[in-house]
Image (tube, rainbow, N blue to C red):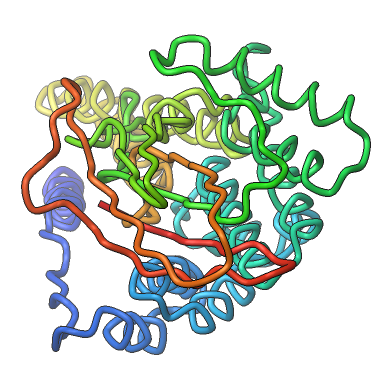
Length: 386
């Protein structure tokens, strides 16, 4: 009877562990990505709303709906100090029997850096380059904890823009020069060198190419985050305006930034959970197998039942532990960032942008013609994707 009961318990445990996950319906879509995003925000659980706000903000930015994008970013991105606070959901994620993805979504370091980067672009659009510079510096700080010293705060574009705004504001020229030198050092592998600053430039063209990296689980039991690399056919852009043509090179690769982020505070917690899960599974396998063998012999039945019980306990602990890393991703980030600064006379101009492949050949159906109006006394900021 004891053996039969134990086997029933084991069967029930195995059945529960093998049940297929619930299938979720794809979100409704009517052709308006921003409207679809707002519906997802409304339906998402509280801990996942920020992810949908960030995704929807980029859709709005690409469509030129800047006020919506700015508001979504402002809601989704608290200050760095708030990000580091441990709320109830974060403490739950740290517990043995809860997965990491129950905590509020604020992204990994490269995702947080992109949020502050977009904030900076909006400030510059609003005629506040000094606040834009503060955002670019904050974005660079998001990358300050990379495991290897050479990968800390090494975003090329963020340093380049920091120095460029400093030069335009006519303030500490040594700081502007130092930021440019640091950007060039980190961009040393780029075939096209970073241009000198032109403080008189009045049209700022921000470009992004391709599809960014996606998170997936790694490790023995899913306790690590690894990245599927992003992809981009475009490797540079050719910009023509005011009778002049220039090449905008790649400044940053988001797959590189994601994969060099370094350890997170949660990594050590997930590693402990993984150790407990693997130990529980091992004890369970040994206990169930050994206990079943011993319980079949009259002279060792008692010991076998006890060992079988220990094995079942191990199986329960191992099966209930949740070491899985949080693989929720800001899914519409780009693979590459680029930038160009133009000096154009006051008035309306058309900027032609061609996205080029690795051989410098224009990709078909990728040309964009952007109309801009240059005003006196402030910069015109343009955001373009391939």
